[in-house]
Image 1 (spheres, one colour):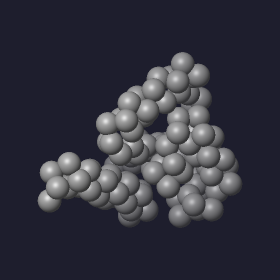
Image 2: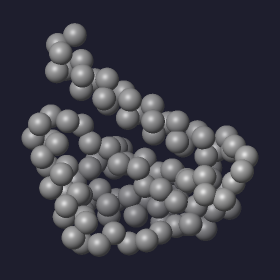
Image 3: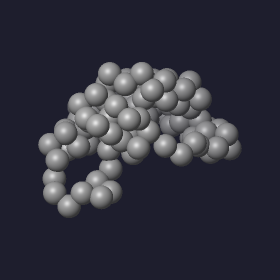
Length: 112
């Protein structure tokens, strides 16, 4: 997993602060989790058991200011040619939560 430079982290933090000031919810996706951790590379179902990934998520959360429960680990389809239920589950779960955050934001802004 490539390291994000301090400059990029600072920029992300500033964007997050501005979005927060506007009431816009913030979420993040951490990608390529299979290359970041041998446990998840062997079995993607270990994503929430991996101490290494939890440490990475916690550090990112602290650096940028996005709560850990709003950071979604996903695996990219980078070498596969067939769909994989475990990969799809992580991606769809993250997407579902992002849509829910967006839907709640729109409802709040339109007072529906």
